[in-house]
Length: 233
Image (cartoon, rainbow, N blue to C red):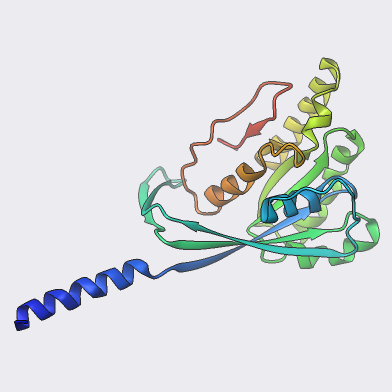
């Protein structure tokens, strides 16, 4: 092989090696809210793809990880100043480090463990129990005391139960949830772990918000539907 040919071959091999290399990013996501609202179920469903109707109450903090590989070579990013950019995240491994705090009040002392260094915090409530939505104000106040920069998400669980409510009940809960999410400047998502509704989309939107990337998931805004409101918040 000629010297020139050798250099070209080495260069090509070097480019291939660089392309094959994976970048790794860890995104910590905290989950807080009252007990028995489905935080652990959502985490297990997302990480393991399974759902167990037998409820096991979280004592303290649960922790799970899931790694996903972003294979797209470029994603479009639109920054707050209006300047667009192309971010290369080809072959990037994103590890979601998910921390789930037990909802019993005696575990509030462990809130810093869940919130510190989190990129996003899911403030969760049970759509079929309005009292758990009312509790969000206090959860938000306390969590913000430990992390003022995490991206807040308001997540309503058990949409499958909520969908059986009367139109008036659905409208009342939806109005309050929208009011809270607006005050929190948080995306609002209704989900169902048992019926696999919006579970994957929650974490896709977390990823897009964390990196300020354009997300093409259609919004759902109608009362009675599994809400998915995340643009312009």
